[in-house]
Image (cartoon, rainbow, N blue to C red; front, top):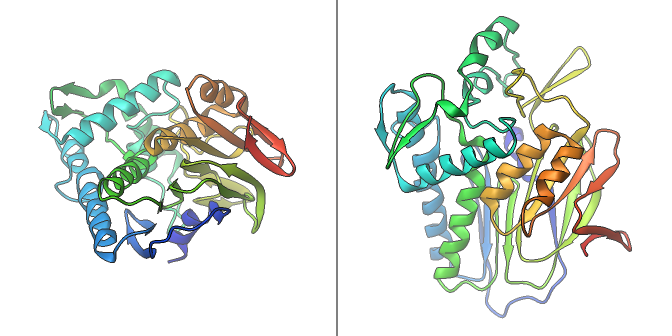
Length: 317
């Protein structure tokens, strides 16, 4: 169980707003190999339906669920018919792959699957070297609603949780919910209140390194301290550089992205971690209505151009 809660604690949420007159309902479950919490001013029946939606989407997008879209693609060398959700996410992932010159690559699965962060087992150099040539997002072929990847495999780990959070928010709003917090493994989406205070966790430590005063929207963090193996005083983490097959080595410990789409924030936070601080800020500043907080390995903080530090808080300009 410890493995699950490290994801949920990447961001810590505080409320600084008036509460709704409606009674809030809340539940927490394990889905997508992580902790999912949904809190909203609605009945438990709607909360249950929101969790059912999460499970339905997981069954389409998970690489480990047999007969999911991704499982079918990864276990076939011909075109496979898939859902609209899968096509949309593949296209979004390819967009960010192009935008980052391949640093973000949704086909990193042949390498990422070699790491066992639960049992703390590292793959051999030989296995990594053999898997690296299979990583190439340009090998994905899409024809209408069918996808073919003749070798290698797709892993939506860097984008699916965000997309599912977006879908839950749309569902809740369609049900008339006015205020909610959706937390899918640390992918936060908040709406309905005037302001939220989001605490960003210190890498590898307890406590908060910075607090963001944010508005309605999503807050997504990626960091080298979420899943890692420490061996001979070296950290081997889960944000795999597709050029080397190992955890990316640069100046960053974590990135928190804020925007209106959790799927975009999910992809961007991973992409920024792979790019490093300077290029990561350039990427964020090229995206409309998107901001980010970069926590460097030395403990210092970088902010995208739309953020400033004021009275001890990170706030929008």
